Image (cartoon, rainbow, N blue to C red):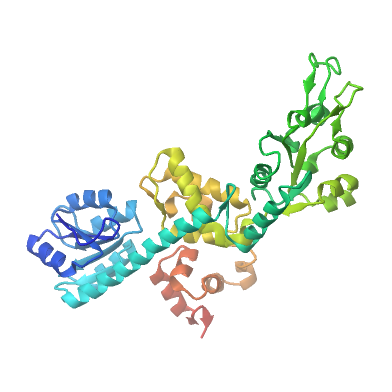
Length: 463
């Protein structure tokens, strides 16, 4: 049964009660504009309805034939922990209420529930759901306006980088992109190419760290037939192949010094000399180099030519670390969820709040590439249409506590002192929020409260 009280995009509520009279009374009492109400008297039919409709809220009786409200709660939390589940019972006990909340229930009501209280409790959840809907809409709008030439970001550092790309793209001949592994240096290079005067030309990539040193010169500049053993034909190098377009030299810091000297000449004169040839060839190639190394230090250590460094770094663009732009993580999450949803043919809707918290707390040493891989893994593993904590890679579900933050038992002298310090550090990391601290410690909220009382801690500090 369905009660139509609003548009399809409105907040939706499923009411489950084996008493048909109660169902009708509850649906009538909660009906108002902006809320779509669905009802079911059979919990198994209700479960199928919930799987099909993906409601924001489920209001269910606790004691029902065939499946209890707690079993229904377990099933719902199993495929969509983002649903607010409210249980009602005429057999209220503190133990059953605690069990329901631990299993993920949003509320637990004692029947008969006063209509005013029911409307107030459900109204609060409806309001929260409306806010979530609006947040999703805003995030979608932000994602649409925060994508620049295939790069997602709206943080100040990314906005500054986008501005630099736009300014230099029409004018550069040689350019250096710096940044840690996984920050998207090739995406920056491709954006520069697309906005450059040679956008219609080729974009050619050479990973300098993957080329055998003895073949480097041939790969870059080409060779003539008979130039060395195995050179059975004339072969143009990547510099020639990219003429009229852009050559992207990734990990330039790994280029041998002998090749660096010839690259400098090619950049200065816009001409190359194939291995085994005496005749120079003119080229018209834009060059973008990228590195995750400190090239100034490499110059000082005589591992990189100083003159080549200055030739390349006349214009330098830095791709920021993900740790420096954590404000972009929600946008990147939505971007990658949409990407893998299409790639795997799964109608993924997003991530649960607890999965988002786990991603927000991770330091991301592998930067955006690591985040992309984590969401790709989760998108492959998830059975439903919303990614939860258990779908993430194990190292994100069970993060190792930072060694500098937790003194060892030897240092503290006793196991209880060590446990106390764990609780203190978790409360500090959570900003005093007990629920978040419990998640950090991987224990229940009640267990955390017990430990706070045990060690006489008030908000994580000794009282």
